[in-house]
Length: 226
Ligand SMILES: [Zn+2]
Image (cartoon, rainbow, N blue to C red; front, side):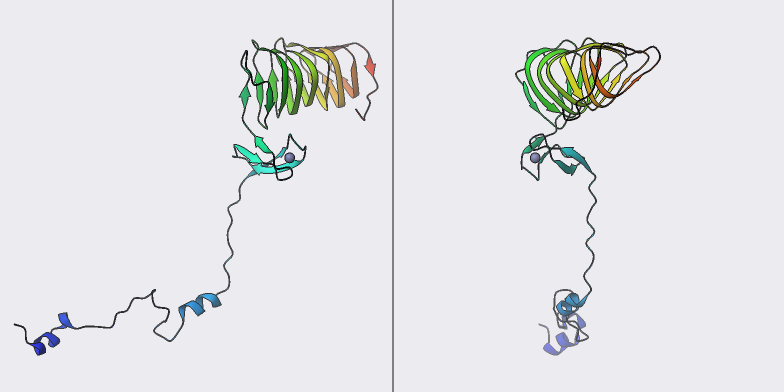
């Protein structure tokens, strides 16, 4: 049996008012937590800066900014789904209709027809036909042979290549370090390096031929509107 007086004298049994700082809305000094919080100046929200890159939507042709790390995106102008995969076309593939903001590679042993490709950079060494549009650089290597409607920003014919375009290719810039057979229409300039050779008509505003480089064929006046 514990005497009541003994229990009250024992500090172990003494009861104290519950104090839970941070729970009560009222502060001991008569302050008010909620009011004090609201009275504080608003803190500046630090947003993480996401690195972005500019891409050209292959559906509407407008420029959009997308995160560098994005694997796919939606065009803010036309809401088209934008694919960013890099692809390597294999022999006998059924993926003849390709739309990507990534790069497409066509290896030397690949022969495909009825292709319809829109991509960023393309590296071609095989024999293909169809419609090709590269918003970046089209690099021709080996015995690359391209037939159809061919459009690129920059055409690069690699050193040692013996490439063929039929009937021709329309680009902004052309760099020939190897041999190219076919018509070249370059709105900007074309540069035939010492190891380069162009066999075919050339429609270009500015043609630079290094010593050793060759152009065999007529030079036409470029049609700027084309
Ligand atoms: Zn679009």
